[in-house]
Length: 204
Image 1 (spheres, helix red, strand yellow):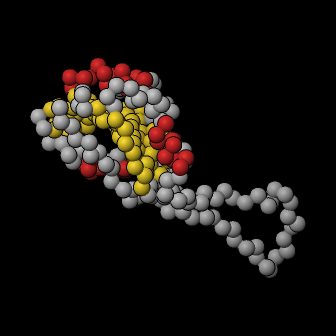
Image 2: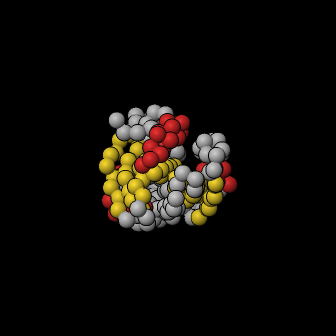
Image 3: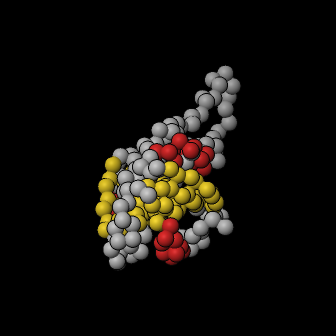
């Protein structure tokens, strides 16, 4: 069974810029009261940006995220590291399935609105560019912020069930996990999904 494995995601173009908040100097024309410890507390500042280049810790986090879920059977693992991301692919030719994880780095942080923009219809077109057609049919989320998108796609005459999770890992990092299984292996997809994301294996 032939399976497309090129599931790359476009680079992040919308990363927010970093800025620090300053304080206005006191007017020299009026005497100022003596400063207390409370007066010396500065307003909160935007955290400094981090480097886009993944660290070894980022790579280890990506490789270890699924534990031993894909360690057995016919799964073959490969990975890469590039500016802004670490990617891990597990390919199973015997059942025609592929799972793909990306650890995305947002150097200056992100908000939910950034993720809304990132996972737009234009980005789905890029993710599924190697398929003849695709359709994102469902979207849901858990209380902890975990997102799940459910899609269907076709390639080389085969239909696939696809589930795509988005996990807020840290203030600067997001984990995405995409499982692509043939429709005939939907029960197996359910098993893997429940093992990795028991709180949101599928949309209600």
